[in-house]
Length: 169
Image (tube, rainbow, N blue to C red; front, side, top):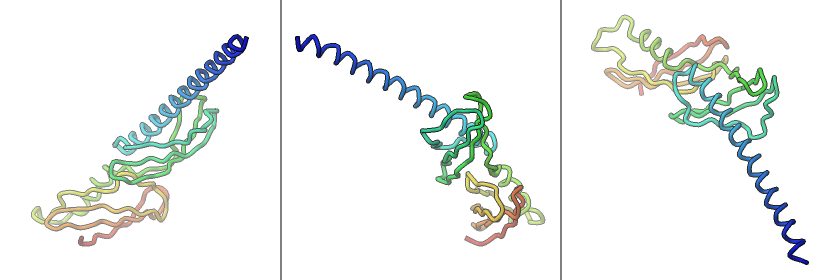
């Protein structure tokens, strides 16, 4: 008699655990997909694949949903990005303005080389991989040529205009 009562109870517990596991796996899959698309959006602007993307687990994929994810680059720099879900589960948009790092490195290297003889030119300029564009925000680039140096830049507005100084390392 006890066995007859125990068997349905065990079966019910097993089904509950299986349902919980399936639901958890589905949520984990949604989280991984969300983090992939945030990383893809960052890569589109920054031309670099993020080393890690962490979004909250409890994000509701409702239309117009807003949340923040932490994006970390291979150099260790991190930026918390704002994300908007314009359509239910079909797309997302990173609304935080990020610096186009490789483009800025090329432009700064060109500016630093203007008027210099070839033997005194800047050979390499390596800026932080992830930089949020906002007034007063700062970032540093390491450079080399005949001597090592650092470029310290500050955004003068929210559109990406910046001022910079060059200092010996």
